Length: 338
Image (cartoon, rainbow, N blue to C red):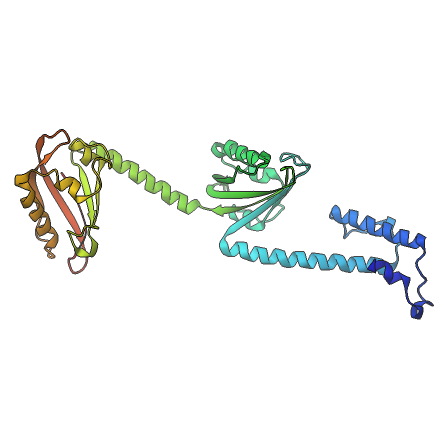
C-alpha cells in the first residue's frame, strides 16, 4: 500500500520517522476505513475526532486526494453544463435505493439548466427531491407521466421506454410543454440501480402545431358546410401539364361525385379528367391551360362542364379557380372549386 510505505521510511529518515508497527498500520487502515465511510456519506470534507490519532501526513494526503477528486468533478460538471446549455437540453438523474423506484431514500439530482427552464434558480427554490418536479406536473398529465415512469423503472426487461410529452408549471405560474426521456442502469437481475434522463423545451413547437391542427379542423368543418368542393394543384417549373404536378382533391370534392377517399379517387389530374364528359373534355382542358399560360393573369378560369359520378351518372358543374404566380407571371399554384 503506497500510503503505508510513506510511513515505513528509509534509512535516511530513520532518525525522524519510525518504522510502522503492526499497531500503527492498523491505525492507518482504520483511519482510511473511516475516511472511505465518510466519503460514501459525502462527508469526507468534515473532520472526525476518531481520526485525530492518525499521522499528520496521512491527513494531509487524504485532504489532497479529496481536493483532486472535487476538482475533477467540478471540471466534468462545467463541461457537461456547457454542452447542455449549448443544445438547450436539461439533465436529471436518480440513484435507486434497493431497486425500489419509490423508496424515500432515492437521491434525485436536478441540473441547474432544468431549473432555469421552468424559472427556478438553484437547489434552494427547487430542491433535489422528486416532489420538486412532480408537484409542477399539469393535473391532466400527472397520472400518465408518473405511471409511465414507474412502468419503465419496474420493467426488468428494459423494453418499456420512458419518452413522453407533458406540461410543467413554471415559477411564473404558466404551464409549458416539455419532452422527457430517460434510461435506466440495471443490475444483473434487471432491478434498477440508477436512472438518468433529459428534458427538452418543446413549448413553442407544440403551440404552433396545436394552432395548425386547429386551423385544419376549422377548414375541414367549413369545407363540409360549403356547397363548393375545393381542389388544389402545385405547378412545377411553371408547367401546367408536368406529370409531377401535385394535385389535391378535397373529401368534399370526392363525395360530390360519389367517391370516398384517395384509394378510389387518387390525387392525380387524371382522376378528374377521366370523369369529364367526352364532349366537354377538350374545351375544359383548354380553358384550364389558357388560364395558367396567360402570364398576365387576365384570363379567368370559369367553366361549366359535366362530370361522371361513381354510379355512372353525368351531372353539370360550374368550376372556377385562381392562380398564384411569381414576378414574371409564371404559375406556381392554382386552386379552385366546383
